[in-house]
Length: 253
Image (cartoon, rainbow, N blue to C red; front, top):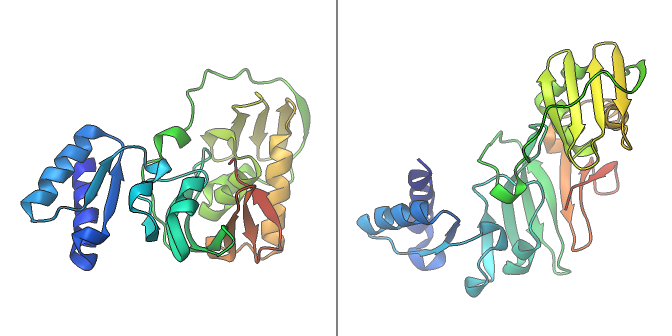
C-alpha cells in the first residue's frame, strides 16, 4: 500500500512536471524499491531517494515546492534551507492528542516561512521520529482537585482537539468523551478530567493550559483551522490565531 501511494503521487507529479523536475524521498528501502519499479514500468525515472525525508535532499535543491506525504509535529529546518525564496512547503501538521491541520507555507527572503492552514482535512502516517513514544500504565487518583472550566468532550471536536494540542504538545490522550486523561511524556505530569472535575499533578498543569487555549479560541468565535496560521523561523515555530501578532502557541521544535 505504501509503495502504491508513493508511486502514484510521484507518477502524478512526473506527468504534470516531467521526471527531471521531481525528487521523491522514502525512508523504507523496500517501499522505495517497489515504487521505483512501478515508476519505471510506466516510463518515469525521477530522482527517487532512499533516506530520511525530514532531512530533505540537498543535492537537487533549491526546490519550488516541497510536499510532505507524512504528518509532522513541526517543520524540519532543512526544508527551509532547500526551498527557494517564494517557494512553498505543504505538509500535514499533527500531534499526540490526535489533532491535525494542513499547513501551506511560503518562504520569505529572510529564511523564515509562514502561512495559514488550508481547509482540507488530510491525514498521513506520522513521520517515524515524530511519532508518539510507547507508554506504561499511569497511576491515577493522585493530585490536586478542582472544578473544571471546559468539558473534556471538546477533545472530540476536530478544531477543539487541535487547539488543546497546541497548549500541551508533549501530552498524549487516554480515554475519550466525558472521561479523559492527559499525560505529558516528558515530565510525567497528569490530568484526569471528567465533565465536572479536574485532578492534576506534576510540574505542568495540563488541563489549565488546555482550558486557557480553548477559552481563547472560543472568545474568537470558535473558528476552524483556516483561522490559524504557522510561522517558522530558525529560532522558533509557532501557531497563531487570527494573524501572526495574535494569540500563539509554540510547537515542540
